[in-house]
Amino acid sequence: MQKSAGKKRRRSESAHDFETEFGDHFATSLEALRDVWPALESVRARAGPVVYDPYFCGGEIAAYLESLGLSKQHFRHENRDFYADVKADTVPKHDVLLTNPPYSGDHKEKILRYALRCYPRALNGRNRKRQRKKRRCKPFFLLLPTYVTLREWFRQEIAQLRPDVQPFFIVPDEPYHFDHPTGKGHDSPPFESLWIVGAGTQTEEVFAEVVEHFRSSSHDAERSGESLNGGQSDQSDHPPPRAGKQKQNAARPRTRGVRILRSTAELHQHGVVNLNRKRPNPRQRKRMRRKRQAMEASTSDAKGSA
Image 1 (cartoon, rainbow, N blue to C red):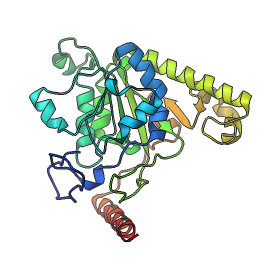
Image 2 (cartoon, helix red, strand yellow):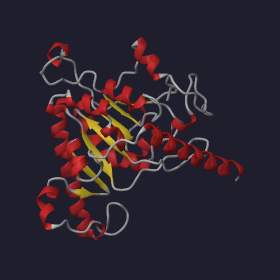
Image 3 (spheres, helix red, strand yellow):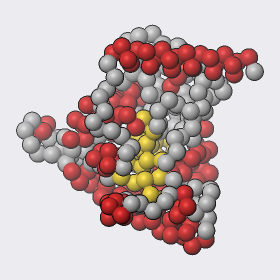
Image 4 (cartoon, one colour):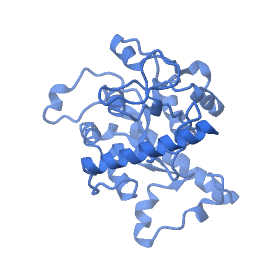
């Protein structure tokens, strides 16, 4: 949640010993953690129990994870400057990285590159020269805006990886909600988010296990007549696919309000992102930014006067 170089932004009202942005302090919701919990348990069983979240908001995530079954002694989450820790090589020891990073500036790019720093690259071209001494790939869970998967820097980072270690995606059917510690700002961001999950050389195993977990959960829900998403059965929530798509969808069950997808190509196939959509030009982006800022200002004023 540290401030990046560039245009001056609104300072955070939260207590941190380093500079942060107000708009970056939107905490990970319990619903988002529930969606990723089966995958997190699968990864911890292989990599180790200690989970690390480097970006501190208000600390609520510790209680959420504890309610799901993660003991406090296995969670590292402190109010400290992550980038200073990286520079000084004082990052807390951990087995798994799980975080909802700040969405402003270049934080999204920085955390992805940090998470992938030890992942094996495909041996082609300059990557053959860049291949580092073999080190253990630490699993990671990054909650990021869906649009990140369309960014050129993201696609380049993923394309450089060996195919078997490329991350998979956990995509909610409904957008996640976020809370600000001050009670101000937007609960619902003007974009959707998804989990990006990497498990190093065990990514394929974890992916298969998570898919099977949700498939089994879906069958249990259908037998009981209850939805895993708290409503009706999955069969009524999601009508049967058209005949032409039955084979494609069968490999990627859509259950419990999430979809488990293996690649950016599948994100496109399932309509999560549109690879053919052109990015808005600078004038359009400026107009969209002004609109979001006006909405944030009006919401903040309304909550402040309430």
